[in-house]
Length: 330
Image 1 (cartoon, rainbow, N blue to C red):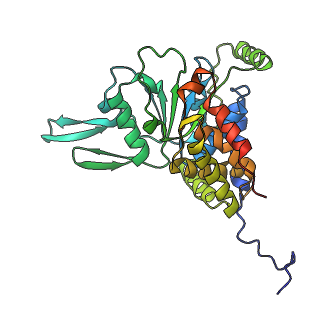
Image 2: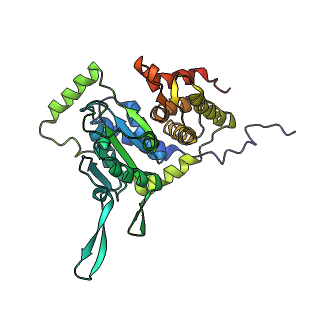
Image 3: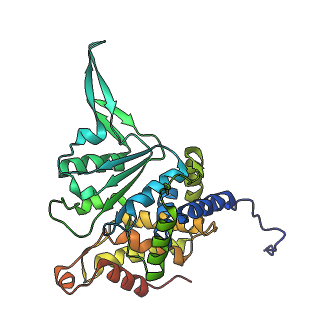
């Protein structure tokens, strides 16, 4: 058997992630000119873009959910659309509608705001179920069928939706089947004291200046598609694939969970862990990437039993326990 040495190992298949890493760091730098802290959230948003997945941002009012999505859109040279969900919003308000053209006596389809690349849905739980259902169909299929015609959406197509965890009066709770459409649910906490001081100082120094005006564009749609394709090629060892499966299967067997995660969650962890590896500059996935992906992927896909929920135990705590229990492959 031939001895393997540094001279005869073929490294030509290794991925060149340097351009991707440079762009990721440049986007982070731009966002940090406005957003204080929230490094984990920024990483997760970048991973979602690279993994071609949608994101649900949950946090109390005023923790920069909407402005983060706007800032991110400014760093990307792609179409951006914002839709404010309200109780009277109809599916046609987001998808578009057919209008009769008197000039040619024909119906013409007028595209709605969903026909863009990055869509910000503000307060997604404010709209009624039929409007939510119309949106989730588009998110899953990335196409719209109206009046017998199918319209394919341009790539990249990413939805960032915001939700307020309090003040549930007049809202429509998202069903679990629809929550499953989101790659990540990102929970945003209050800033720490030092971060709060920094936020106030920055706002004071801005005076009348627009905080978004100086944000530079970093990535084009062509580059996003190229990087999404590149991330799919990141190496994942067989034992790590089994590690992902064990974590997900454990959610189905856990006594504290009424509902476990589906195979879609396994695929989501796989794709997200590749994204985390990429933004760390690695062309291979480690157990740490999988651990980092597991909580934002799983926390909205499992349901805590009523007894444990009454005790104040959250899905995040249970997922953390599962991750600690499942043996890390060596």
